[in-house]
Image (cartoon, helix red, strand yellow):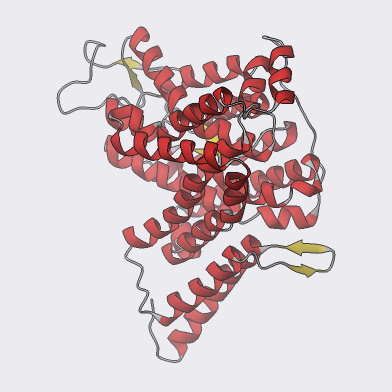
Length: 424
């Protein structure tokens, strides 16, 4: 196993050699490595901070656990997979839906997801990555990812309608920066749009006075706000489908890094899942949102051709340092509803379309009646937020849609095969 804190200097330490990349176990000079690490902080910032802002979780606590989680990920994967563990958008739906149950129950659900993800990682490590392809084929994974994003559509529009002008300015800014912004700026479209929306809200008096007062009163340095979990079965069941998303994101990240560096990483896919599960478990135990590997940072690596894990140690350390500033957390908390609405109109749609992308890239056949009917039912259950009680547990659309396709797909596929229909 590669030692996570040992790197060889790539070339002359200034730039990647022509046609080459800086491998995970290599680095450039330390000043350049620090600079690239700061780019990774910028890339993950918008998304990582937006999740606790939307769900009401403490921003600095989430930032702390994302930094700690990144350190754990780098150690557990032996320094072979460059990745930052930031807040997962997949948690927004169950955390938003369970807001009335209180933060302790929500944290219990986050912790439970982390434990299950670790268990999946252990199984993958023992059996091999091929297990994931058998249990969660693209048609199933895509459907669950899509319904998680689209289930949130009413929450996005409700926030937008509270401050429509602020929401519109935010939305237009995100779209323009994402489409027209060059290089890294384009990949920071959501963060830039949120900042523009916040400035517009401040100029037009749309910031909540109580939150502005809290910002003025906040200390520059202080401990993050820690909370403990409690366990409510209905909230846990609501959040468990997130495991599917985290598995898909982690495995996709591993495969993407392997393709870009030319190194096989299948043997550490299980370790990656275990690491993300442990990071999510710790976050749930202490008050932070669940974590996942970040696609935003893949964009930075692709642009710089630097895949050095040394840069991620810099990013993790930076996040941990910032987490000890209550002033910073209070600043993020001043983001108004209209800005959140404008941003989430895009974000939730992107989550839904990620599921469609999974289908497209894997050429899922929707002329196949099994694929067509099972996905159709799962999506409507998720988007319509089908809510039915089972005993004392109340399950919503995300849970029913996910359960339906995870059980319905293999059953119907087998029946189709037995009856002589399509085999998939």
